[in-house]
Amino acid sequence: MKKYLVELTADERARLEAMVRGGQESVRKVKRALTLLAVDAGHRDEDIAAQVRVHRTTVEHIRKRFAEEGLEAALTERPRPGGARKLDGRQEAYVIALACSDPPQGWATWTLRLLAKRLVELEVVDEVSHHTVGRLLKRGKLSLGGASNGA
Image 1: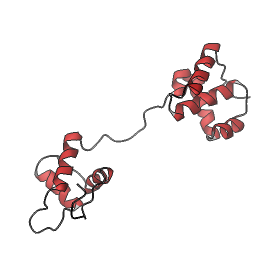
Image 2 (image 1 turned 90 degrees about the vertical axis):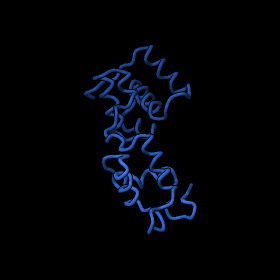
Image 3 (image 1 turned 180 degrees about the horizontal axis):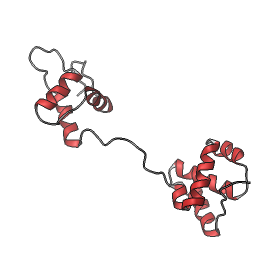
Image 4 (image 1 turned 90 degrees about the horizontal axis):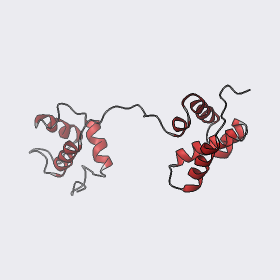
């Protein structure tokens, strides 16, 4: 006997079926809807997991969230943990512009550590890691090694 039972109302079932057929929702939301429909139909968690292509514990979590918090909570994602952004848009633009500029005298090219140090010297940021600078440049597909600096 399952601890968390899912019994959908006719309106909830119709909404989930429309969501699955609609093609406007994210894949994650559609998988949650399919899971709830299958659980309501009485299928086993293992069979649902195989059909929807999720792990069995995912089916259990969706079932639990529906029972404890309702349909909306079961369909939506909770915010994921993670730190705040290190650089805002203006600061990111400054990093990119600096990386595309000529390196300081005595240097052939910018290095990540040199960029990070220069950003602090110019008071663009209070502190920044060379790893953060590297991730930003990589995300922008910029390279410090080429003659054109990727710009």
